[in-house]
Length: 135
Image (cartoon, rainbow, N blue to C red; front, top):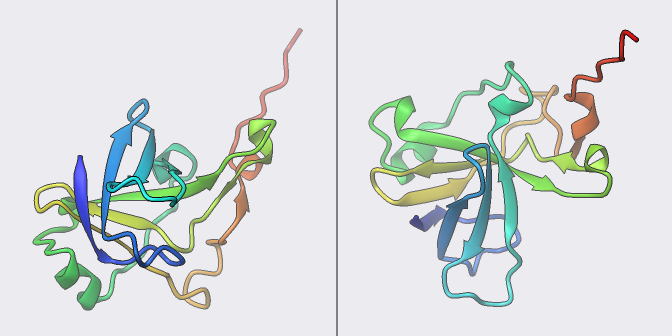
């Protein structure tokens, strides 16, 4: 699905329109719609990794994304993939928000003092359940 970036992605302010493609319903690929030299981002649904990912949005963000209700916004986080996958990192401090009804998206940077539990490069291994074999 295509989205207009009403709140820019930090470092990629020239990227005005993006395409979001689902990989499997939990992971997504975000690309510049015009296919410029900008890289593609891998995004992840935060609830896949943590149940405590809750934050307040400033009214200005809600207005830019034309959200009428919180359910209008889908929250995804940028994932920096590494090998092995346990060495990958997630940016929980600057989520991407998508209003599928209006075709709008943007990035918001959360206040690190208000949300000290959210990091800009949290290791994914901190959220994976490592189960030992009982054998």
